[in-house]
Picture 1 (cartoon, rainbow, N blue to C red):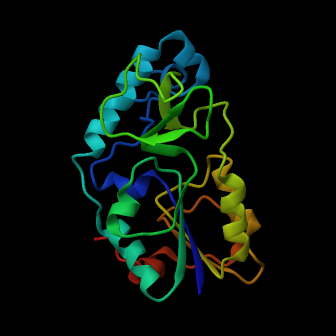
Picture 2: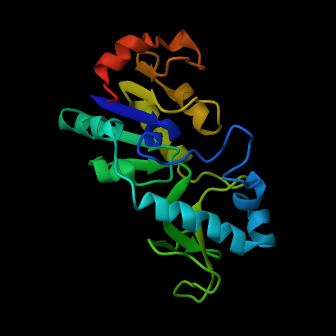
Length: 217
């Protein structure tokens, strides 16, 4: 069976990863446009680097939780693709081998002049850290106002899936929220959320039933 799994911040929260946006709309005390937009980066790259350096350091101290591990175990008998809005690597560390990151990856950086020149990166990133072409590196994160380069690949995966599992995301942030609209008419959709916010016209099963299929703790 081909399974597409759409995941969001709720999957990693139990591991200790803070969600980017707090209830007051700030990201760890910062206005979102200060740390997650090309304009913010141009105005004050040092603030942007510091923000992601702190998040990168935190990521290296946490571990996958039961949700990540359960999703990885699905690969034993199914063809599974994880499509995540998360920028951490906890799915990979749990054992998932096919992961699409819609919003980039915290443990990677890229050249500011060539978005295809991507490097693995676990240390702090600072002004003056350059790629092989002597151009400044930036976080490999999709910021507001930028295209999500993997969205078309993700849409193709959803189109072919026999089952779709949505977990840890409200499905309210686009373009990720629109992916489920690409599902086949006969695809089974499992929405793991006590208060679903997407349409039930796609035959979503009751949360309690899905929780039995998908233990989270």
